Image 1 (cartoon, rainbow, N blue to C red):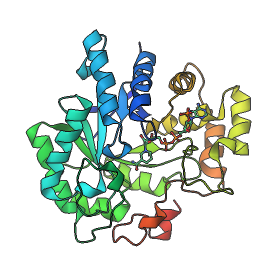
Image 2: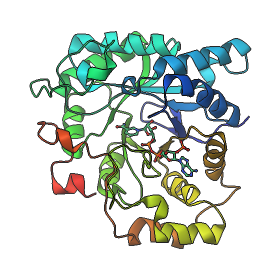
Image 3: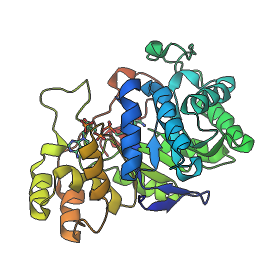
Length: 323
Ligand SMILES: NC(=O)c1ccc[n+]([C@@H]2O[C@H](COP(=O)([O-])OP(=O)(O)OC[C@H]3O[C@@H](n4cnc5c(N)ncnc54)[C@H](OP(=O)(O)O)[C@@H]3O)[C@@H](O)[C@H]2O)c1
């Protein structure tokens, strides 16, 4: 069994470049998906309390640990703090709930899922997780609580998700531990070139979510552009005789970013894992440039428009929305 390449983060901890996404997979379904992913070679699993399936992931991991084929230290487990738990005293409590559900003793990486906060809620009631925005709760307070988790050894690294430049800048001003990553949507319609330059300057690694355009999204509209159907991507895929998904994943890998991709299908999990292996195929510079610079469509699949009135909604400025 092989694992994917790793990248060194700003705290000298290595992170596997390919992560298995777990959004939109039920607690029942996820047990087999994780088993399948681990058997193929995935070692980095991207979880979140919001996805409502951390117990299922924990069950699957515990089965694997019992079999003795995989140890906790072989894995890189990420989870995310949901918006309802940004209060200082909630952060540790919520981290412990996730660690307990995942049955994993510690987290390799814990992220603030979004920069805006919601009113506090009962963690047992996942269905209430879209509650009202609480603009008074500053993510700086949340970050301070996240740092204590590192000191306590509950998490190895901490980072951000869906933060824009100004918001990251504020964290950098006050932090004891710099965020190691910022997990954001990245694909050729949302390449995040400016954010990448900014994050590189601060040694913050970008993680790309929805690299295939999240085609399973429930809020899909009829005229949305679909990146898997893009004619440039399809013609490059034809040239290399691979699936368009493989081209999109290589695009992220060739930018030296972390790639978080979801599948609940064994064949596609396998295909995705192998498409990041350079021996299978590699984009030449001309094709990379076509994807990176020439595609003119601009689109963000995860917009969370219904939160656009929140003070810390991250895509307010034109430059945040149109990368
Ligand atoms: N931080 C955040 O706010 C945030 C937001 C969104 C997502 N994420 C993370 O990023 C992960 C990935 O994002 P995502 O799930 O939104 O979208 P994605 O990975 O871009 O796309 C997943 C969709 O693509 C399909 N797919 C997978 N491999 C394929 C292939 N080889 N060929 C054709 N279709 C394929 C999947 O279907 P099948 O399952 O049927 O294969 C699924 O419908 C999430 O699972 C989550 O862990 C984080």
